[in-house]
Image 1 (tube, rainbow, N blue to C red):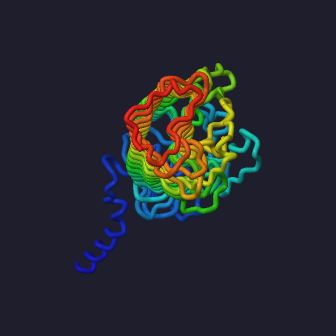
Image 2: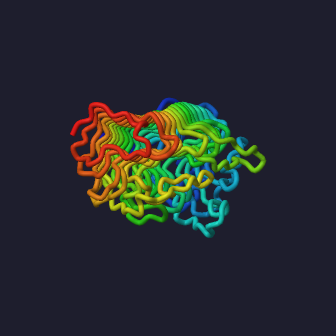
Image 3: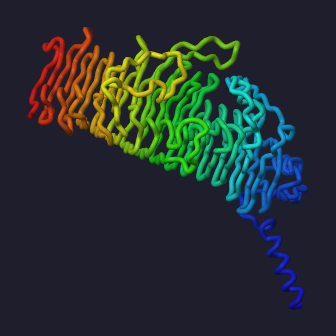
Amino acid sequence: MVKYYYTFVSLLMILAPFIFAQVGEGTVFNVKAFGAAGDGVTNDRSAIQRAVDSCSKNGGTVLFPPGKYLTGSIELNNNVDLYLQMGALILGSTDIKQYKEYIPNIKSYNDLFLKYSLFYAEGKKNISIRGEGIIDGQGEAFKVITKVKPDRYMNRPYVIRFVQCNSVKIEDITLKNSAMWMQQYLACENLFIKGITVYNHANQNNDMMDIDGCKNVVIADCIGDTEDDAITLKSTSPFITENISISNCVVSSHCNAIKTGTESTGGFRNIAITNIVVKPSANRIAKVGYPDGISGISLTNVDGGVLENITISNITIDGPQVPMYIRLGNRGRKHTASAVTPNIGTVKGITISNVVATNVGSIGCSISGIPNYYAEDISLNNITINYKGGGTLEDAKKIIPESEDQYPESTGWGILPAYGFFVRHVKNISFSNIFLKFQEEDVRSAFIADNVNGLTLNGFQAQASPNTENLFQFNNTQNGSIYSSKSTSPVKCFLSVQGEKSEKINLIGNDLSNVSTMVNALNSKIVRAEANTR
């Protein structure tokens, strides 16, 4: 009897992961019971699909016990929960013939090039991919053979692509090595991405995640390190990306850590981003961009649509070339060949607060609309930035082209004439409690406003070099005020006011102890100065 007891216990221990797996409610469908070998060599695609199809009939969990599962495209159905146990590794096939072609019913810019995905779902509900296991797309096997668009994007599978799905959860899993974007969610609703880890440096266009025309989205507690953009909000179709909450993430990117765009047909609305750490990538070889990244925060809208009601707070940024970039442009790219060319979009209602940026490049931050179309109602509060510096007199005199129809990149203009902020074609913008400094001597102004109407600088403290001509420059700016601000080192002039359209400028309660000249203006009557001290 004892012998049989120990035999039973031993058998129970072997079968425990299959019988007692705590993976959720409903029936458990073990992929090995459907014929999956789990040896990393056998193609388990058919077995996995059978398990998924059986699960969808009544709902439940498709279980991946420890093992290596080689597969091509898997299509998820309603009420399917994929669960990868610790030690489970799903390997994307390196043979493109193992991937099905999926062209969604919804038309988007991606239809030009996107056909293949490892996990795909369209029009489904109640689907999830969870667990402690790993999905590895093996994307390095899919070579980029041309630089010509859109051919350079083709024949590279995504790891996850869900289209017009409702009630989606992606939780705790590790995602690695996509051939293209790691995951795209197009026109989905009620999407939850939590606790995932992404490492995506296998190929080009290796985004961490792309939330595209979705609404009601929660992203939390994620860690990502990617070749291309990290947390990316897009709008490649008329569907707007809205009602988005992003929090408590640590991200690294050779490109942009937090980004809206570039595709912006429908636009972006009602977005809250908080408690994010942006740090240098562990991968020090950048295929594109920079080892420490292009930007920390990039908010762009260049293909029509809206960009409004955005709040970003509690962000730590270490390393990228540009801490912050906000851009309204007019690239006007159509999302399909037959679509109407989009009108110029809007950028308004943006608040960015509690940001600390260190070890950033020399370029500077830009906030810009285009002639006759303003970016509006922008507020930046409690911002500390430590720039590399090194700007020259030639940089300080640089004329920045409009480039309104160009791809919006924070590095696109190169070194800006202001080391801190270059603000142009903006209406109603405020800066409060701003602290700027640089590591290498920089003769550029800390701040330049050009064609700005409604500008407030309150508690703006900035470093200057002995040869800096002006700490602040207002060009063709109306209704501008500087309060309780100062240069933290000696500077020739506090404020230069130029341009025939400049008027109604106020200097109130500023500390001018490090300033030789308070104002340099063509018309001194447009500047009102009160209670400034030396």
